[in-house]
Length: 392
Image (cartoon, rainbow, N blue to C red; front, side, top):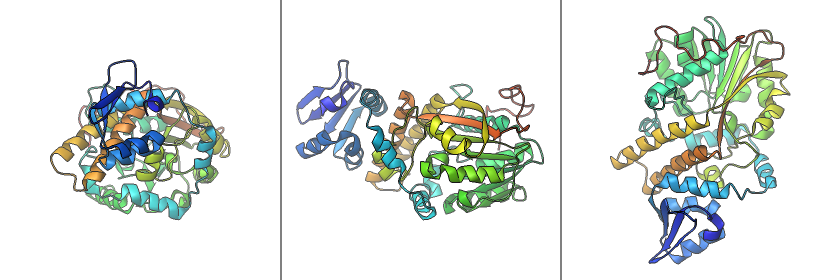
């Protein structure tokens, strides 16, 4: 197994025997419960490590994230075959399959996510205009960053595809005077979002709709999707292109896609696909451009990569999650708790090393006059709106 993950700076231990995989001092020690676990992982460490860790067959002593960062960097020198990426991209994304995938991940219960997300329940990359910002402030800054990129104006209409717990839709209505139709499949998230809209007096301006993105109808001035493209599937990019094309105003419309991506085609970690995000696929920019923007006749206006921001976001989530586990507030069993610890730590490591990227792509229908002509005002908060503290 040492040869499979070398030259990662980790130590492998079984009983009193140990070996260093890399040339430098070990940042973490991987301890195997028994010979059988070691034998199984030696055959397929990448795909089987997650379950072994979740089941307690493997313990990681030392810095879990640093160990995963070192392993990721070692494995990056041994990329998998491209045919595997294409094979996984062909997994069908039917409405029923996508609904079950949403239920698997997002309907674990709002009480669980409240333990470690920010107060507005945003489950996507935050924007740290300063590294010492609180998670709450950084998430508020992310929402405003999106709104400014879209150049929202009072009275305009917005469609949001995949709205989570509704924070962005409510922010757009409250701070920018727009009306929003926000779509989501998760019953838990929709129930939360509707309650928040009522409590904040925004129910007349924000409509939360429990429907698949394929069912989006009507017209809008701006189209936004934060964290949904990863779950659409390459085969359905043309469907999403049709939705945007028929929804977005061709003369003044504009939109933004915010999504986890790759620098080159590569499948999502197989363990994450099985246990955490069934059917997810992080696309390259090329796949997104060819699959969505070209068929919909959209112009790409701006591209930004927020990868370091997602690594920092995940550190905040992981630390909050660990405190919740230590305090006995995570009610699921030990296997679940270990599984989610590894998921959060592994995701942080993936963004630290560049295995994963976080793209924001601003677009508009070809010839649209709806985009701001300069970036003036993109980074300066308007009067009365700052991100040192939550603004809700």
